[in-house]
Image (cartoon, rainbow over all chains, first blue to last red; front, side):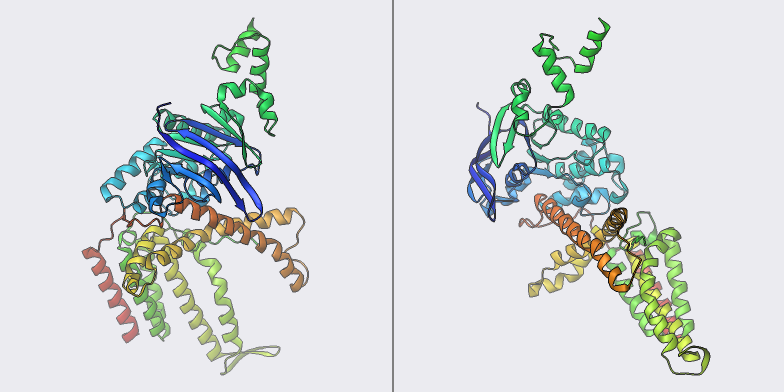
Length: 272
Length: 263
């Protein structure tokens, strides 16, 4: 491939007491890739995500981030500096009451100079479209605004990898689209994205989909290939969205979408 | 009963009190607190209330916000008020059954309640005008001498500021759980005391579990943002003592000396 490997899982297993959460997972994610990790509840998605930034260490096997072993305490700072991790509940992720102070928390922890912190906070808030909220009280924000601020908090450390653990699970459709729009832009800017999601609709944004089942990698495929075979997704307990089902059925009947949005194609067909 | 605890809530407005160095604010708090304990006359307490009221006006914090923060704490004052009203020897004023209200009891209970209210109002004023980060940085700075004794000053300051930051959040969570349990038919305010306490288990248990989950999420968020990874922490907000800080200290000391010595 020639691209640098950002994340490498080599035979990783993880157990919580007697329950195996990950079983012999081997996975490589190249720098700049946008990968969606899918799976039913308890399939091991979040456990996998927590291994990426060394919040969990493997019981067996090895996780490497840009070649750095996550089990090496000496590399912990470098690993965490290069990874932004966003969880689903934004309110519980805030350390400070003022937006700007919270976004500055990460850069402060890695010992950035004051001027550099100011620039990083400004850039991160600008990226998520929340520059006007810098002096606001974080507890007074809406769920969508909070999630965008939490995202800014991870971006302020200028990470090369972004791990998003169901970031839209608690958001309304409008804010969901906003957050996903930012994620898409970040992916286009070259950041490696790992998006944990239940939604096939969201996973369509990625170039590659990894499906987890019972702690194992059940499917590892390009997005196009997987969405062309919806029965494979249904097999691991996930529903294909109605739109995708219609699109698949239309294509099966020989109606090509030619890359147009489904709604537009249906409109055209009805008009005819 | 809805519990809306705003203690620990920061009111984000621009005022001379907000702009004071947080370390100086903590010093002023300690000086003021000492004065509350030294003053032993009613006029002295009145002077301190007036001083705190002036501080509050300068702070530009809306009165409604301040009262919301203080009122749940006022319940704490009820116990000493009632005990001192009826359990103090003196000249009887009123008798209700086996309980006698005395002149000394009335004076002492009013005095003690005002003193407790002053302490709580002072603490609320500090919280309302100092953000969690400022509070953390100032506490860490003031505890720094103890670091030589291997005392984890930075971590203790962080824990302290996070605990304060989460008080309003936990109060919101309490109200959500209470409503959810009431929707399921839990009657919290009916029956004997023992059954009421049992009903409260239905709130306290999920509240505790929820708080634990929040703590876990927060810890992971902090760790993933490199907290505790060994790098030396820098500070975006630089603490800086200005002339106005010393002027404020001088004014407060002058008022307190006046209240202690002449009233």
